[in-house]
Image (cartoon, rainbow, N blue to C red; front, side, top):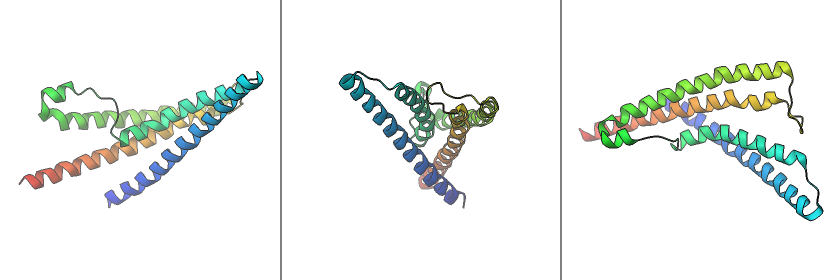
Amino acid sequence: MFGKILKIVDKVLTFFEEWTLFIAVMAALGALFVNVVLRYGFNYTLAWSEELVREVIIYTTFIGLGVAIKNRSMIKIDAVVQLVPKLKMPLVYFSNVVTIIFALMMMYYGSKMAVMQAATHQTTIIMDIPLVYLYAIIPVTGVTMFCRTIQIMYQDYHEQRAARSGAK
């Protein structure tokens, strides 16, 4: 039952991550391309395109955290694992627990920051985008990191269980 729920969550998160990253990057590339053509072809620049690219970089970095966890491509130092291979699984679980704690902190403090931005009604300088939209990505990232880490832990647990039953 829990595995089916995780598969559904995986499909929903994968759809959200892939499409939002695709749309955001394409919008930034389009704006940057138009700005380069205008700058060198007509000696005119768009001020808002650079701000858009900066916001897209921030957005894609935060959304990419969940993708990195799913693909198991988070940066890790594995010198201890190479020296003492028996510590691999305990260290992997420790790393996952720390990631869950960090994700919970992102949800809590990110939502507090987003609420503060909503209360102050601050906007970006050029495009006049409410900053609450940018700060809201922090708790959303916390949720995706939490879900992805639970999925990874579930997979690791079942792989270990299958390896133990296959070794008997």
